[in-house]
Image (tube, rainbow, N blue to C red; front, top):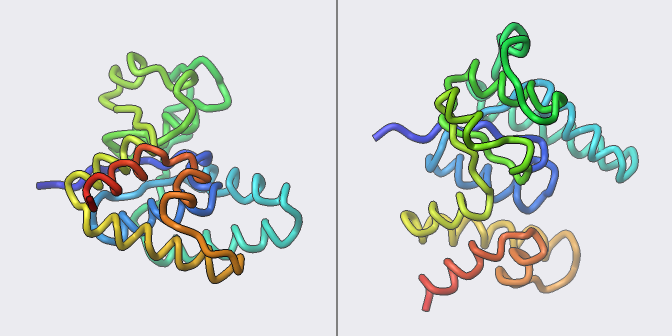
Length: 186
């Protein structure tokens, strides 16, 4: 069985917990992550709003991602942008990157700007991060449990607060994943 090839929109890379869980699942071989230089730059610029330290951390993590997933970088999308359309022209580069990479799906919170019908014309799905991770948890509960626990441990260590999976996932807008993991643990 081939793994799903998923382009990660900048909006799913920016939140730390979500990014950690996605990359943990990808690292466990549950899907193949894809991104473009422009998406990584958007993430780094968004992190700059937290101050220079936020941008520095993002750029460090980008470097680690490039080393960890050398085949994830998509190129050759620029020429495709002229023939593609989305409700928000600023998002066409995301669709072009997905098409250029022969991705199966785009993972984004931004449903209104990535209409399913438009994506289907290009052979793509639009996936919601919470639903996507919940479905992975249904098929690979122990792997997702470990990935989430690693994120909980890191959040606890860095913040000095005692996080639980439920509270951390809720804060990360991953309520469905939290419920799925709780149900599968019960």
